Amino acid sequence: MNSLGRLFKITTFGESHGRCVGVVIDGCPAGLPLAETDIQEEVDRRRPGTGVASTRRSEPDRVEVLSGVFNGVTTGAPVCLLIWNQDVDSSDYQRIRFLPRPGHADYTAFAKYGGFNDFRGGGRFSGRITASFVMAGAIAKKLLVRCGIEVAAHALEIGGIRARPMEFDQIKASAVNDPLKCADAEASRAMTALIEEARAERDSIGGIVEGLARGLPVGLGEPVFDTLEGDLAKALLAIPAIKGVEFGSGFAAAIIRGSENNDPFALEDGRVVTVSNNAGGALGGISSGMPLVVRAAIKPTASIARPQQTVDLEKLEIASLTVGGRHDVCIVPRAVPVVEAMMALTLCDFALMAGLVPRVIR
Image (cartoon, helix red, strand yellow):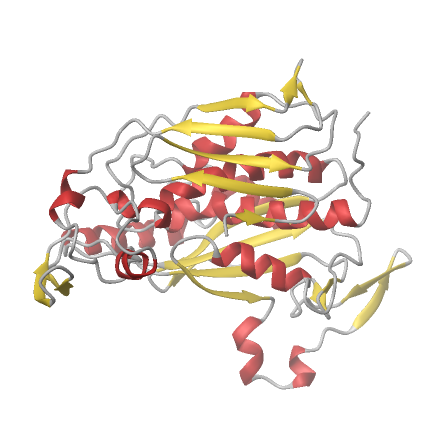
């Protein structure tokens, strides 16, 4: 399905090489001041840069607000946001129409939809569709700020090179101006060298995006099935190329003892806190009041220029494939604002359910 959320519900549409990509947001409170520039700022962060990791496809990605905003504020009606696709070149995809790219959804989409799927640029399964997530996330962020919740993300790791631990404010200030959206300048330089090496070898590289949220109250989450981590993991795994999600100590918790992983409770200015945050800000599927910490594993870009084995779906015989077109060597930097957006969308939905965000903003 193409919808996410309950009270703050988004429905996305469009394909990589179709006419446009867009989103309809139902449940956005009335009275929120909103301009196209508010959304454009976030979308621009997702656009490819001029760095070594980026694709040569250069879309202007100009946001258009089609409905739900009047006189500079939201009306309570569905908000429809759209971006036209302009820099489209489908020639390489026509050539490999029946040669599914290893690592892509070409084969599964072909099988599921009987070959009627839009195969150009990956169609509905392209990272291009995440522009819609970011547009909706920009509105969610504006709503969250009104109740004191901030969201940030950064490139924590690329190709095994990991940034050093930093505080929220330092990450937010430093990652935004880095070409790889990494808050650690020294690590970013080493990551860049590794990406350049992968490009020279006609290969690609993956990494980890870490998302953070602070200002969360205790109590967000609806156990047992609509938990904070469960809904957030679902949202993050809707991002193409994400293959793993962990919270707090995550998989490291499997190799340490309870005495090491447990977070002792303490008091701080009359408020219950924990001394450490291995739980990542959630206990029992409910926010604990500590910062939310989530990490998403991004696989290497599947479209690479090296020859790969595939199957010709028309002839049903083994074939060789060399992928042309324009592709990111590393999509981790562009995934950073997308992770932020999906976190904001999930948290905004829970905030509305908890009554933290009013249905009419005055």
